[in-house]
Length: 310
Image (cartoon, rainbow, N blue to C red; front, side, top):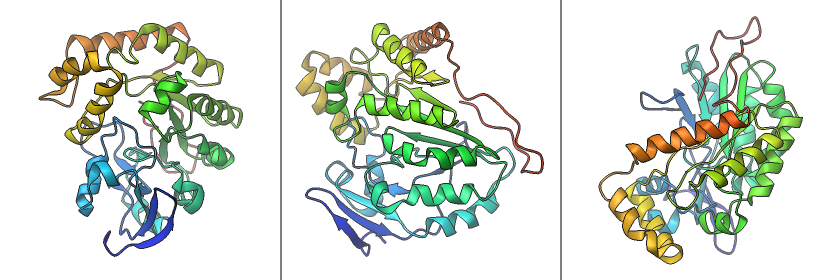
């Protein structure tokens, strides 16, 4: 399907394509806090050095490292597909939008696939919907998200990896700068949308210092965030091929340690992971922030469901 995709548009570096889809809801693996995920786009122009979704381009016989951020596929017929797919959902099953690629990356300005699906959710009630993005474009849909939230459990997670604009530009070359993301938090909160901030991923000896996380949590609280969280770096082989050269160039003294810690596993476990979890929890408590959105009941007459909690 990818090979036959029609070119929608092209910029100097990035090409956009349209790809057909039979379904937009994807069942997640057991143990996650949501049962279904939606990714309106394949590939992501933000080009984050730590991105774990690069391998998905391999399914389309594209080179993950070179093509993932340069060849973006917009899924077609998403509204119709979502209406069909929603019949699969059972009460209490949450839907997460943007689990692999950002639903508000630059392609969304042109093709509006994320908004099209939000408009479908606005048609009904009793659903549990969470959106995760590191783009301030989400402000465009603030009124729509607030409207959906009247009959559904809706939350928005804004990812802000660091407040250091220079470091953010190196880590996430084409993502909006941190201040713009904080502006999105504020705009959503003022519109009545429940919103929180995730400092993901927390990177050892790069973004994990308590002072940096504390400053970010305070800024999030001051702009209207209701929760704050942060998980440690997750490096799949496809991500290591991009992230390790970044470390070698900008943090050469840390390269060996990263290679040792991630040489055989994509996860950081043990004492370090426990320490970060405790650090984030202490900072969260300091600023009166929750770990996730508050539980609330759907309006009477809607689908019976319990909002899922991070």
